[in-house]
Structures are given as structure tokens and as C-alpha cells.
Image (tube, rainbow, N blue to C red; front, side):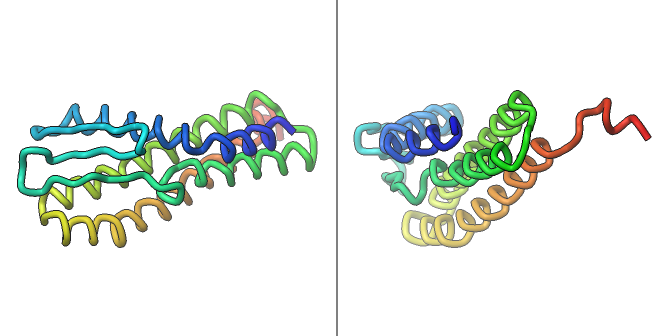
Length: 164
């Protein structure tokens, strides 16, 4: 039940979540960028490459956020708890690991877009970064995170595995 409440809260407050996600990306890109970076959290936008030839404002829309990639983990958690008794701490740990993986995958996707924009310019770099690289990173990374989550959540405790 708690995972369903958390899922509903994520959906209800997804804009605030996107603002935090944009702020996090802004911190990360500032750490590696040699050009200007400006974060407009209230607009869910990071401007990077400022002062260079490939400046771009990257706006985080709901479908580009990791919030909707986290929802399947929460729903699977609810189903696993509903199907039978599970170790709640193990399930929480599994969600934390899988959730962190999804958040990092989305940040990697954003870095890929920024890198391709820097390398190939705003039009071509954004096109390839968003449509091809971004989609590949999201799908493959999301699948890996989901498999990791399910593996951690459903494996038997070490003591049970050691018994014949």
C-alpha cells in the first residue's frame, strides 16, 4: 500500500521532482563544463554551452523525466508485496538500488544530449542525442534497472541459498 501511495505522490508532485532533477543535472554539468551553465529550475530548464557556438536550453518535460521510469518499480513492489510476504527492508533496498540506477541513467541520457550538442552543434547534436542516443540509453538502462530491481527483490536470502 505504501508503494502505491508513493507512486501517487510521485505523479502528483512530478513537476517538483522535475525541478529537482534539472537542478541535479545543472550541478553535474557545471562540474564538467568549460562553458557557461544556467539552471532555471522553475522552468525545468538547463541552459548550457553559454558563451560558445552550441548554446542550448534543455527543458525537462514530464515524458523526459525519470519520474515515470520509477513508477514501474513502485508498481512491481506493490504487486510483490500483494502476492506474498516479502522482506520489506530487502524490497526497499531493491527499490533504492533500482531507483538510483534509473535516475543515473536519465542523467547519463542528458549528458549524452549535451555532449552531442557540443560536438555536432545544436540542430544535429540535439536530434541525434535526443532521438537515437537518448532513446537507447533510456530503454537499455531502464531495462537493466528493472532486472536489477527484480533480481534483488526476489532472490532468496543467503542463508536459504546455502541450505541444500
